[in-house]
Image (tube, rainbow, N blue to C red; front, side):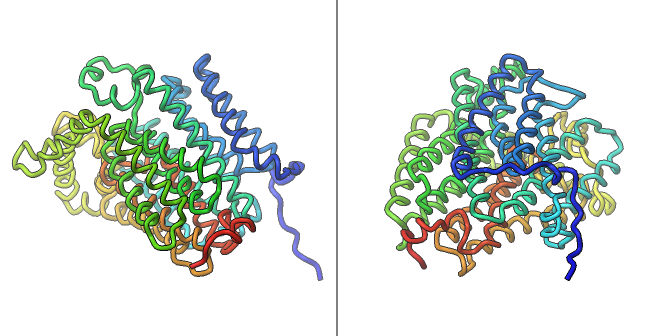
Length: 488
């Protein structure tokens, strides 16, 4: 019987490289050093940053492992954001070029013959491409040409959505799933180190929310803490899951505490809400009847360290949440709540529904900036992804975005309730659902869809989707772990 010959792309003709178990164990360490190297070079010669990123991608491709190349880029994100500075080529910033790199590598991974067969044109992934198509339509509708701004937004969206699909297609074995987990740990380490350096330089949350700093805005001495805080929150589910699996639990405990500290020192209120949601879910797991002692100790450590950090920063925190009390008032005072969000949300909602055409089809991408500048003199956007899509593309684009949000939750929930999965895997599924809901919470209160840090939710959702097709043989189900862990 003759079998049909499968077509091979050019990349599949590269000679395969054997990867030993020892080298797999060193992936995270290699990634950390690569990330540190990126940061050092970017500090000495920022114009070389794009070249360093390209080298990292080439190394991953030469190793015949697309997943390594993708995760190396994920690990490098905090350093690109922290030390990329004002690097700009062809109108795109260093972080935008980073998003271009992630998009290209993810697209290459998805074109491989075996992975293309697994995904095909399944309706299960149509919400992803539906939102991308709607974004392009909204660009066409917009009367004022946004150029580079729209291109940067497109690659930000493509980077984390295609990354999610690439991880789903690539991580069909325990070893590949472990690669993603190890690299997530490496990303947590690099993020913590980058934020520590920014705090020492007084370039993190305290400076960003200082009124004096905005009088002399300087992109070289000020960073946006929102990216780091969101990245940290979305890495926490993967890190905490390692405690359930007894996979380097001490390291996982330390990393979870550091990531929580990254969020707390950012003073970003939306990230606080997301972090508290993650804490609540993990504490509920820790004090369940079947929880391991190690899980309860980790919960105690995180709670204690978080309480200490909150107490030491209590004055700054009170200053950040003070204006939320204005919500209970009326008139202009209430509109100033949440740094004025309530006021311009009302104005955007009114303008989005003032005509049937605006309500149904929207006013084009970037309309929120134009409206807020014309009406209120504010050079800002909606700070709410749901409202942003409503203004840009009407209820049609909002419905597509809500479909994507539902797809993300539906991608993580089955892992939490599948009886074929082990107890640790199901608990990771619960943490993943909480992490996805945290992303949605940030998307509603501040915006997240066009943040580069959303690659972390791409990793989280993609890993869950990959684990669903390997029940009983996930990264949390090694032979050693199966003999030690309880079953439900």
